[in-house]
Length: 188
Image (spheres, rainbow, N blue to C red):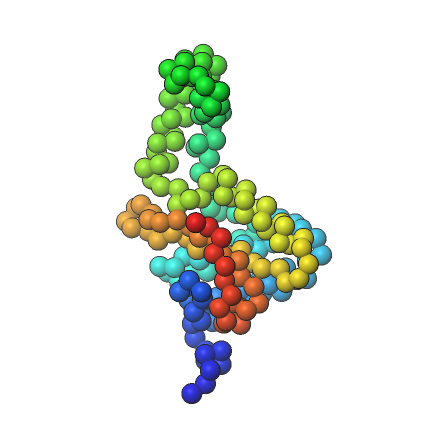
């Protein structure tokens, strides 16, 4: 019987995720592109995996926010100011009053509505903070010596119109492209 590395078909990864032969070929192309690049730029690849459809797509890092918009509702200026006032020791009623004076009651209500809509809809952990963290990690990994891993976002599964779970960020290196297990999950 041939070894698991010699067999064709899906290859298991550390977290039980399977990459099909076409996925591994796309990963190899992305790894070659990273190795050939002599500087950081927006065209570097990010891979997105929709597990339910076994669909792997590739998007340039500069288009990632357009393709998979991060939830920015909690970053609204009205809500940030409210949190700052609470952190400074102001009572909630006073913080709300100050925000209403600074931004207007309608703007504050709209910011809260968008925030709660996002909470009900679910963000799958894909917030502005996690998006910016991915960019920072990618750049740091690109700039360090050695093999450059490719980020793979495993998209949360859908349950009807809502999504369950969280998107997961994995960094794939040459071992994953060869069908060996070397994936590292970096999201909680």
